[in-house]
Image 1 (cartoon, helix red, strand yellow):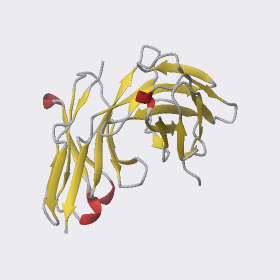
Image 2 (cartoon, chains in turn orange, yellow):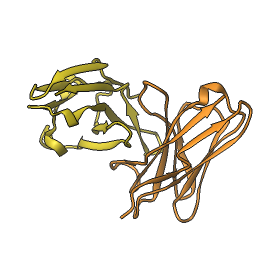
Image 3 (cartoon, one colour):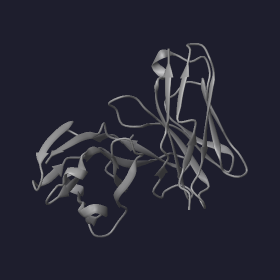
Image 4 (cartoon, helix red, strand yellow):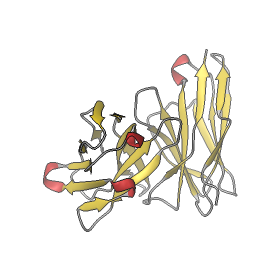
Length: 112
Length: 116
């Protein structure tokens, strides 16, 4: 049983560019949450998707957007990249809300 | 809003020493609490969780945590650490939105180094 998978593993982008990160949830899971983990910090909640809709959002600007597909996989898009967007982006999946979340390995984004 | 505090940022122990990592949360209502571990080069893994019932929770790899509601605490413990416990440990709590959906709020993490 595959766990949560994310792609790509690493990514280097230039300021002002746009990036798309992908996540496939654990089998049987229907809810995907995205987190940003800056160096030396705990993960910060970006947003959560359930039934292909954004159900709640953390304190992140509109440059951060997402999508969930009918197969429950999800994308995180970041526009107009800033140096401060450099971080590890984590995807977590769960069965609905209110249950433990399982994390993927993350995508390391570096903005130069 | 929920917030989670971890006061020990770096901990260094020798093998066989006992471990206790502090975690405090702010919200006083119904609370769900977690400890996650991130081994070097690996993804976040759930160590243990508290939803209700026995406040002493046992997790994987010999870890346990005690929920003390009166102290807003959920400290992680292990009687005897091993070199392989070297990792970063995160305490987290659910925060429920007004739509009923829950997000995880994390502490800043504690980096544990166990020397052989």
